[in-house]
Image (tube, rainbow, N blue to C red):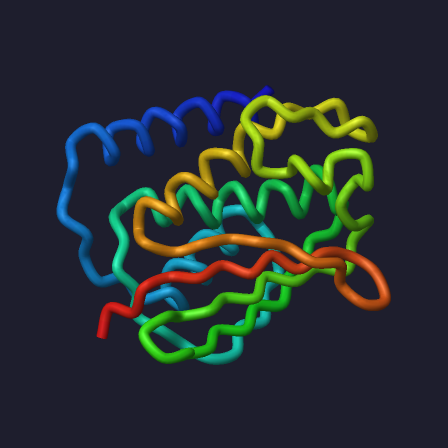
Length: 159
């Protein structure tokens, strides 16, 4: 129940960021990820660093991803690799959990998709995708080897 309340609060925060049309600012990914991981009680290993163009909703992006690690992957550890690639920053967000439900892989970022294994509504990833795209970036995923999932987030560099 608390996760649902937090998700609603985060969505409201994201809506405010979109409707107010705030100018994008510079955010340090390592600081944001470390802060959110500590708040969510997730162990995280971060390699690399990067400054990106975003707004305050960037915190909600990582809150959603960490929440998914707990709820869907059922793990409490994430490895994050941050790389500069031309004018972009790539963030590889990897876990060694259960992986993505095969029934929803092709529609993972679609509004309202529910996981058949957890029954949880997929609104969070829909909002994450729209927020990253609003920043001029992208998000995709792939299977982690030998198990788990990797989310690849692409942001516009802010340096």
